[in-house]
Image (cartoon, rainbow, N blue to C red):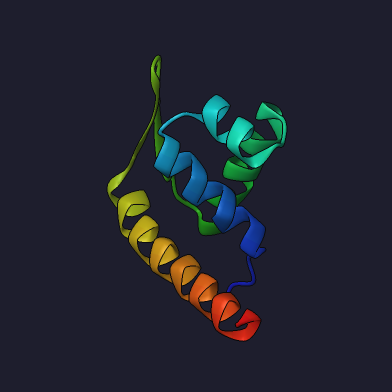
Length: 87
């Protein structure tokens, strides 16, 4: 099983949601180069492109779209768990 830092998935999720690396970096309060490096690291570890870069931002590849659905669900489940234990 591949060990990938969950933070990379959070960054991936935010970039996919924003469709723009600069906007995602603002939402995450980290630098744009750090977001870009994180996406490249995740793509390298998964050995596939997750985004198509365009002049207007980024678009998910087919593989990126599939991964996005699972990451979104996983992050939502984690949020539910956090809410349960804090109540």
